[in-house]
Every structure is written in structure tokens, then in C-alpha cells.
Length: 336
Image (cartoon, rainbow, N blue to C red; front, side, top):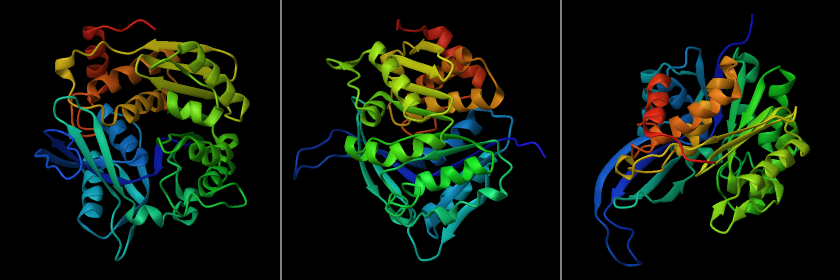
């Protein structure tokens, strides 16, 4: 039977998005204006985002949750979006990972407080990839999973699972999270030879490659492209996509380069940047699954990221593909 669909695995947590009137100094008080629990973590967000984009192929989620309210909320969100949870394990007596996301009301700036919960117990044995008929395995993210981050014969738990995925014939993709640069480098490098593609931001690309991609306070497109080429030399098999505030750049094994400027989002449309990177990645993954030209995938990626800014939650602002593209065309694009 031909493979079809995307299995999203790894980081699963609940983001408790709390809008606050200000980020207070030590021993001062801030007021919580609004609170919304929703999907969080690169694995969970990707599955929900693809569903909200209207993906016409099977979606699955693989990882662990606790047998608590947040674990049940995870299952309910998946049920609501038609995401298969056969690969989702509920661990008795454990707490589901969650993140308190403090969002400043005036600026949309975010501060994160993460409780690892069962994510600290996530292990390669939790991924039964032999049972999936998905075509693409999307994985994230090294650096926040104690057991998966430990050294193994394949480098660490993440590279071990990716090696199995390649042996089974899945296409593989990875996202990262912004932890200390040296930690990103150490944990990601063993994964690179087992990845067909990677979708990351400019700071993560700099951490993995050692290339300074910044020109002052902004990412330099030429340096970003150089980081993309370096990631291919380090082992990525087919495609590197790097996103940054001004847009996104994709570099292929065949030497092709694509650039797409970001959407000119009116400030009045921006509530939070929470989840914009995951939204961008979901546009790329949908296009990869459907065999779209990279130009179209990149345009969807920046448009999905743009509409995501209209919600305090990671996935709440994502709209179907046509609506995302229409928003971008109406708002216009920056110059890259």
C-alpha cells in the first residue's frame, strides 16, 4: 500500500496562553487579562496547523501525555481536528507537559515557563513507526526532552528514531526549539544525516552551522542562504528551509535557491508571534506532501505565519489554504 499522510511526533504539550498587562519586574504584580489553553510543541502544533489548513490527507500524532486534564485536552483537540492518536501514549500517574506563555498585551512579546512533565520520559520506544502508513515523519524537538536528549549509539534518541524512520522508508523533517546554541548544535548534528528536510529559524541555523547570519539586529539573506548550503553539506539530504522576520529562504541539494518575502501584516492585526514559526513550517510540509513547486510552498508558509499572528494561541489563527493566500495577497509582501 502506498504511503500517504504526515505523522507528527516528539514535543507535545499544552500552551496555556496568558495575556498579561505587562511583564513585571521581580516582586511586582501583573494582571492576567485572558487565558487560553491550546496545542503546543512542534509535533502537536504541526498536526493541528495542517488540519486547520485543510490538509486532504491523513494526519497522526505520536508521543506521550499524562493521564490528567491536559492529556485529555490533547486527545480532545486531536479528535476535533481529525488527527489520529494511535501513536499517542497516555502514561499513568504522570503530568502532561505544559508551557505558561506570558504574552504582553501591548507588544505581543512572549515569555515561556515550561514544565516538562511526561516529555522528560519520552523515549525512542514510544515511537512505533513500523505501524504507520504515513509518507512523511515530522519530528521535534531536541533540547527539551531529558531521555531523548541522552547519548545513544546513533547520537541521541532523536537521531535513533530518525534512523529507524529512514530504514522504514519514511521521508523525514525536523523542527528545533531555541535553547542554548551549543546545545542545539550538539543535539541536532547527529540527526542531520537522517533528515530529508529541515525547517528552522535563522538563530537555530546559526547555532547548528556556526555561521553568523546577522547583520546588526537583522538577518542577512546572503548569510542565511550560506547557512542553508552549510546544512546540506552537514548531511541534510534534500532541502533546507530557513525562516526569519523578513521572509524565508529554501536551498535544495540540486543547488536551487528560492526566496519569499514575508507578508506586510498591519500592526493592528498582530496579537502575538506565538506559533508563527510552526505555522510557517506547516505551509512547507503541506507543499512537500502534495508535491507543490517550492515557490507556492514558501508563499503559503509566509501567509500561514502571517495569519497566525492574529491569535494569542499557536494554532488558533490558522485558516484554510485559500484564505491564508488571500490574506497575503491583500496585505502585500515585503522586499527580500
